[in-house]
Length: 124
Image 1 (cartoon, helix red, strand yellow):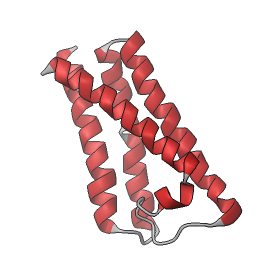
Image 2: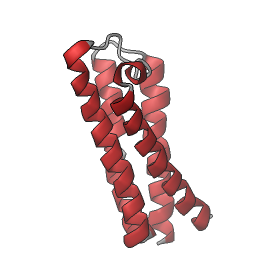
Image 3: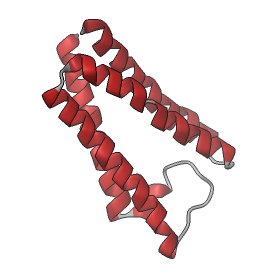
């Protein structure tokens, strides 16, 4: 189970990097799936690039932590980083976005990240 959890943490890192790249390459197209009712066009898409950079950095940090610090430190990092999808869910809900996406996508992401963190912390 421990090895599978480390692999799952690596998959999470790669997935977050892919999401970040999507927000840099095609920000408006990717943003429609975030859950908010409206998205900016034109110059305001720079805000979506900010999300892309955030996701790229967080995903890379997951992979670097796995490679250099071991599973226990990775567990702490994941536990702290679970705050990000919780924050995303709150933003979607506060701005009249999709409750389904807020709870299922963002809340589900936070739950998976926290669960992987718990296994890594308990095993390490």
